[in-house]
Image (cartoon, each protein chain N blue to C red):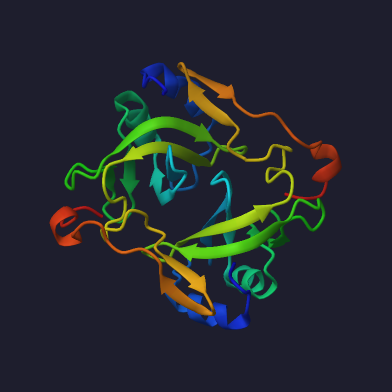
Length: 137
Length: 137
């Protein structure tokens, strides 16, 4: 496990290429099972806070504010390792997800699949979204 | 394995929310190992072609053209299953990757990780990028 530290941000940030809106994409993957949980966005501040705290913080583009994952829902992501892609515009976050990553209450946001020419639900909610995610994007 | 078909596109496309430039993000994951290989972009035509052909086609934003993964390099991605996230702006592609997904010749584009306060290379190329990817973005 990576020990979160401010120096990690100093090492990482020069390798990142934020887009015209100041974001990099971040893919969250459960570290031990390999399940891809979600994709969200980070600005520079979210990257710094994530590395410093060891808890994943995104930037909510809909709410235009830092989004400390799980702050309101309890469904937090503990950072296990942060990886960066070849061109520096996408992060892969290996995380330990508490409960449901998705605001709909499913473990993963990718709960629909194209099968047999139709779009099928392949996973059911594991938590009640009304309870967990009332205020979280 | 999903049988690729034109009807799959008809089922999927209404669920997608393309961004202001006409793209959805697409995360490619090796279907059997769970390794996250890369993130790229698809427009509507790329989605349709991927589902119809069973071979992953992206849209190259740098070259502004369809990017049939592996067409010039041989490092193709066979589609195993296509999943879509809760808000329809990100796809998860379960693929069978031939060789190296990354244009640098590494299996995955995520070959750097923050470890011990530094950005470290964690995977070496498995193919010579000069040979494989001379013309591919």
